Image 1 (cartoon, rainbow, N blue to C red):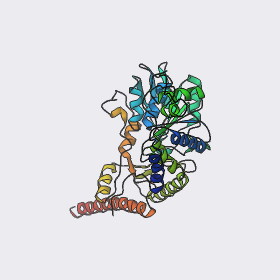
Image 2: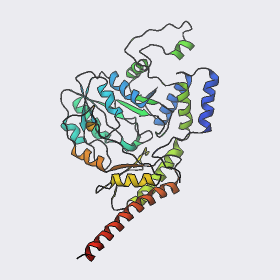
Image 3: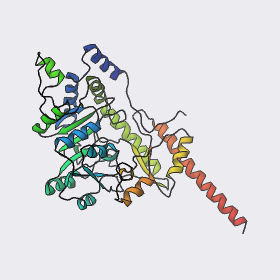
Length: 387
């Protein structure tokens, strides 16, 4: 058995053909292919204005910077998320305020968020962990009551829904990631979804160094190439190469969704029978799964990870809590998050994974617990024989 990785991109000849067309056009940077990708994502979501950027991290940074987050402001976010969600806060000189997550689905805990709001709180970054949507109704109530921005970190959740509406329909700004292992990939890339034209125009300028007309606009509209820098900006735009990959992936998104649902259902059906495995509440009718995460109880997690690796199955830790990281470390304690982290394990889940390979992973897990049971039984018999 070749090594089964926790994640892997699913790309092929169609993506190569699209990239070849961009090469043939001689316009590799941001241009008409990026705009087409934005339009197709808007059509897929069914609402909102989409601005394509070069990463999910760039999307989050632009979102916070564009709403005016500055030094001294506080932004509430879960500790149990990838460090990018927190780096964008500290990059602006603001202070991350870490909140707990719910044990059943690892989405942000609403009551803990409420307890941490004060006059310095300017935004909340809910993370749709593994593609499972946060309680957006409750978050929108908080937004309206306290006049706080909601910036959705939907890096895991492209294609997921909440109460029948696609993620990207709720907060002030929603940020997607299209890196190599996400639900669809652009190779590298991200997108910002907003519902306010004035804010969209500002973000478009900021993604290309604050310039009023990007390179493609100057090429097609302004032959003399004049431009004006009207705001603080960054080099965060997407290229035609990345957008071409994304367009090919969008054509396959429905098949990707169905495949991942089948794989998660198979995992759930089999793992629920194993005593030390605790499953998340997936709500698969609305979730486009990004990664398969399960809790391993009674201190077995690290031993199981070693056993899987010996059997050519990679597993992961998504994620090491940020309040424990040396750069972000504070005096805050998050007992539930810390307990959850000690139990979490990420198992292989990607579009090209087969049911037979999932079954192999499960058999490896079963063999680990069976060997533990046998050892415990042998030890008990030895104790009895020595009495």
